[in-house]
Image (tube, rainbow, N blue to C red):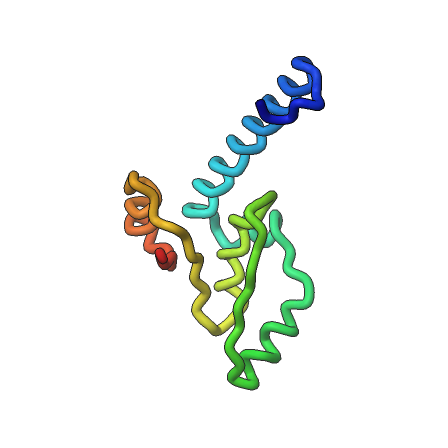
Length: 112
């Protein structure tokens, strides 16, 4: 059993929070496929973007790693602000839903 140190009531609370967060992530992922640049600017702020731009000017390679939590989905909007092409990397799943969405919305995702 997961979280054996919690009571049934506490586990149920964790479960509900998990599913609420998971639904939010899916809705945000779908929204990123159709959102305008103006709407992104209202919702997502980059800090220290000048560091990325400076590395670009120097011709350096850049790898940006994001945790799989909270608003990582919005980082794809960085392509509006940098000259390099940004790509998301994911592991292909047995179902092709993500691959189909990427094709439909022309997203730059690479599978490994």
